Structures are given as structure tokens and as C-alpha cells.
Length: 613
Image (cartoon, rainbow, N blue to C red; front, side):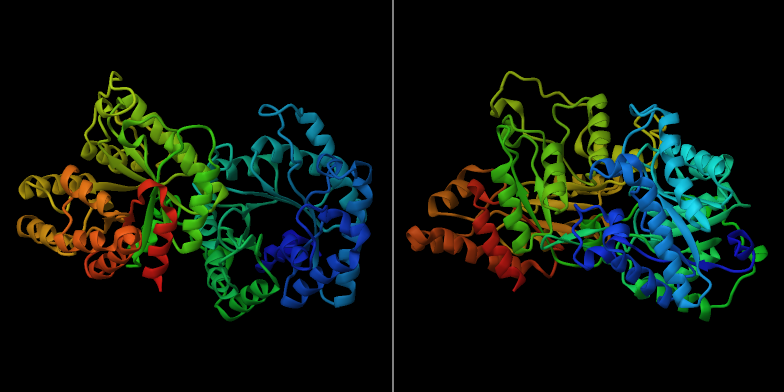
């Protein structure tokens, strides 16, 4: 069977994940999966068999990491040829036993090392390593060479050269992208498509990355760039999530079935699944294509460039999605540590996540006191705990250069939720002599982000290469001394593009409706989400201090009387008061923004659990 001739006649269904299936059979991720071709071929054969039974017309050998560099980490660098030959031979045995016509693709993954000009491995050394693997796959009888999950164009070009020099088999070349529709080295889908076509790949495409939605978007852009090429697409089952220590993928088989038809309509010639997918995903895709009307290749239209670029570069944040879906959201503020250690902070974040907190807000130099950079804390919390964060971003103390550089840094670290605030004056903090000049007020910074960075340009109108995807919050005082001024500032922030609002602490449930009513009387419908500030009380002394000495905070007499009467049980009553308040504001608030005092994350946890019951 000749792959290219088959692709002129129909869409080919490939298999799904190999690693996911082997791991489900008890193989640890720190083991060498490729070695199983020699040590446990039955396990690999079972996976191939399940995919063929599900309808796969092309299966990929278990040789993704079978190159000298990756195998050397397991002491197997002398077994490159043996492992690759065994991978093809056991796939051939499974195909023969199935009595079906199934193509075998010899799998070639990244070398696992950086190559020049971004690493020490020279181009010729990389090509030599690829040649060693590809020659073994071809000699063992593979029908096609698949070079997949690449993120470096220099590396994949060397792999294609090695394939052309060491076999006459068709070549599929596939790249993986990050959440922003770029490779790890910043190349966009159009550039990738051009380079792969120029290098001589017979089929080009995308695999791994995110779920079907992102890969459909990337496929359209690649086909726009190379309309005459043949295309391959194999998405993950969505972005992976860590649940109770296990890696889980959210996209089910039916979801893949819906996208199978869309992939074909967008010009995909081969499709299957990557990480997290199973034979069930492949079976549903196969059925969906069989029952949907086929479109002749000549009639598949190339999407207009406007259609491609109009789609978002990445999915909205979890916070944005929750607020859009009217899900009551719980955000909890944490302060960065004063020193190097993040252990206590991470323990607190883990407790909050386990209790049901949706988002962790990270303050930036609260009360103008020196602390670890809030960006670093956001990145550490997102990476180690797996909970989304919101970065507090003060304008005070930052000129235009620093503001924009800091925004780029935050985006590069994977931070997408930003809360724009003026920030505390340095005169009240650790370094009262420090300057706190600024070039932008909060509404100006909101405008810079929403109408500048999120559109792909900086403050001067110069391109920043690609748009950012910030979800921007702004401050709101629900019980201001001057209502007219607060309404005026609120309207200015909405016009600048603010997506949501965080409020100062409130203790009366009717504060929100009063301000909303005042706004709507002047400016019409108010339709922005409000996360109401909740600052749990811990004692009568604490309540009296906030009521008497903190501007903008007014605690009802009844609440202060209850906590006074509680004596040493003041913190318990503080939890009760907070829960009662939260339940009473759900009619107008989209969620809460909780500010635990004195690092009482245990108290915050009690409140979250009580609210979610």
C-alpha cells in the first residue's frame, strides 16, 4: 500500500496515544517505554491490536524515544537498531493477525537535547542520530516515517533530511505548539507549514499541543499557508490536569467525533489522537467520518485569512470561563513571602485548593513592604499546585518601560489573570524614601493591556509579535464616601476595557446593589462580574480596628456585637458572619475575593467548605 495514493482517495484514521495506554497498564512514566518492544512486546502488541479493532488504518510504532540520546539516559544507547526493528516487527505481526490493511508508521520523536543554534549538539550530529533510527525503521519494513511532536524547526528539518537520505518512504512531519499557537521557539503555524513543505515532507501537520479546538485552528492556518499540501492532525484529549496526583485529560470520545468531521472539512488527510486518547476516541472518530457526507478534496475550500486570524489565539482563562458561565467563583488572596522560602505559601495554596478555591490571588508588595516578586509566586503556585492565579499589578512605582516589560514577563510565565490597582504608597512601607512615581493610572493601564497588548501592539503602537491574552480586573469600592466620584471612576475603567471587578472588604449585603443602582442611573445597564471582598474577622479587637481605623470599611453594630460576645471564640463567629454574608450576596455578586488575615488559611478553608456545601 502506498500512503500518498491512499490519501488521494480518502481520509485515513490513525491510532491514538501509546504512552497513555501503556501507563494505564501499569508502566511507570520513568520507565523506558521503547524498551518494552524487547522486554514486554505483548503489552505493546495489545495496544496496537485495540487501535486496529477500533478502526485505525495507520498505527505508529512504539519507538517515539528510541534514539541514541534518549536511550542513553536508560543505558540503552547501543540498542537503537534492535529496539526500532522490534517496534516495526511486532506491529507487523499484529497487522498480519488482524487480516486488515493497516499501514505501519515508524515513529521518530525529538532527540531530547537542544541542537545548534540553541544547543551544543551540532546539526550533523542530530542528523546522524535520526539517520540511525530511521534506517532501522525502514529496513524493518515500516510503510512510512512519521517525525512528530517537534518544537524546533532546525531539528525537524534535520530529521527530514535524514529520512530522505536513508529511505524512500513517504515522510510525515508534525510539530507541536504551546497555548499561544506558537512553537516553544516562537514560530507560528504559517512559518512551520512553509518550512516543512520546503524541506520535502510529503505530509505536514500538528500533533499533541492542546485539544481539538486549538488544533483545528492551527490546521486552518497551516493550510492557508500551504494550500496544496497534505495534512495530518492528532490532538491531545485537551490540556492535561493533575487530579489527586494523576494526569487526567478532559476531552471525551464523543467530543473527538464532533471534531473529526471538522478536521476533514478543513483539509486533514490523516487524523487520530495524541496524549490522553484511547481506542474509544478512534472508534468514535471513525464512525463520525463514516456517517458524515464526504467532501471531495477538490471541493474543500481554503478558509479566508480573516476567518483564521479572527479566532482567539488561546482559550480564555478558567476565571474568565467561570464568570462567563455564571459560576459563583471563590478567589483567595495570598501574600508573597518576605524571604526565599515558598514552603508555607505552597502549603497554604494546597489547602485552599483542596477546600475548593477556584483562583489564588497574589498581592504585589502589600502595604509597600518588600516581598518576593508576585510574578514568581504566581508561576510557582500554578506549576507546583496546579491552581490558576491572578497577579496583582500596581501601577505605582512603575514607569511605562517597566510596566510593559513586566507584562511581557508575566505572560511568558503563563500568567493571564491580572488585577490592575494603584498600589500602596512607599511612604507607609519598609522604604519610605523609595520613589513611587508612575506614568499610568489604573484605568490607563487597563486600556494599555486591553486595547494595546491584547491587540498585539505596545503603548507606542509597535508590534509585540503576537497579542497577549490577559483577563483584566480592576478595583471597586462598594461603600465610597463620594458615590458620584466612584461611579465616574467605574465608568472610566469599563470604557478602558476592564473585564471584572474586585471590591474592598464589605460587611453589608446591600452595598453592592446600591452602587450598581447608582451606576445604572447614569450609564445604563451594568454587566460586569463583581467579586465581592470578604475579609473574615478573627476577634473583637480586629473588628474594632477595621471599623475605626481603616478607610472604606464599615462593620455593622450587630456583627461587632456578636464577635464581642463570642470572646475567645471570635474566629469561629468570624467564619459564621462571612458565610452568612456570602450566601446573602449571591444575587448580585459573581463570586468572592477573600482576604484571610494573619495568614489564617485554615479559617478561609472553613468558609470555602461551608459555602460550597
